[in-house]
Image 1 (cartoon, rainbow over the protein chains, first blue to last red):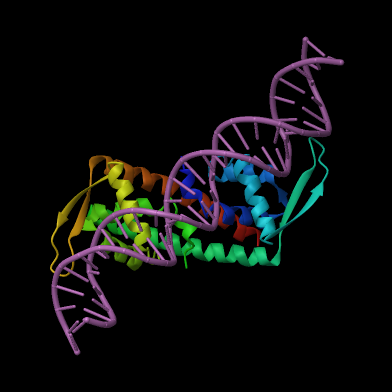
Image 2: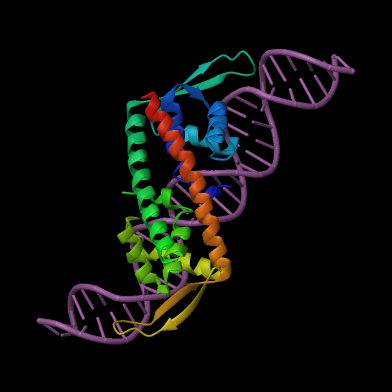
Amino acid sequence: MIPSQMLKGILSGCVLAVISQRETYGYEISQKLGEYGLGSVSEGTIYPLLLRLEKSGFISALYRESASGPMRKYYSLTPAGRLELEGFISSYGELSRAVERLLNEMEAVK
Amino acid sequence: MIPSQMLKGILSGCVLAVISQRETYGYEISQKLGEYGLGSVSEGTIYPLLLRLEKSGFISALYRESASGPMRKYYSLTPAGRLELEGFISSYGELSRAVERLLNEMEAVK
DNA sequence: GTGCCTATCTTGCATTACAATGTACACGCT
DNA sequence: AGCGTGTACATTGTAATGCAAGATAGGCAC
């Protein structure tokens, strides 16, 4: 299980990455993140996050009808969102390399 | 630059990892984390974190004198701390693999 | 004595994941 | 008709935690 605190700051970038693949909506994003192994991201997490990203100008929304259930709110990346995603990838890489170094060195000591 | 939110939940595990290598104190931990590339972790971050870890029983403290400056508070891992560190490594691995999968698939689409 | 490096601690703030709850549509079952 | 289930979005309140800012204090160089 991935602790919720560990997802902070990672999740928004992951959502941007999912949306970058193709236009999609909250409910589907939540399921996809689960498939990737990020744990079941609850609705109380995903919808506020999407609203934050929209308000920040990183994604734009469009309501479309659904065959099964209520209207879906489809999101797609804006140019600013694409930049933000690149920034996330870069930052995550930096973090990832740092932790990797640390854990490797620890193994060496052990 | 690694955004502060991205460190949440990662930092405590990293601090445990540093302490696991050998007994050390807050000021030195802060510098070490910087060397590993985790950005400069400020004092307002590291000291409350160490107190939390101590209160949780993951580390134990011991004051020692210093040749240059005031007393140092040396920390070492407790058995519970070692377990916690192993849990962190496992969780981080899970997170890391998930994000890796996601970003790779994204690259494939692009 | 003034300034700098070392060293620890506290207060208050901002961000954000999440549970709980409410709303609403479509479909199948009884 | 009434009920449950799955789909779909949103809001409210809580908890965790990184960090800036500031206080305290010792040792050393100028």
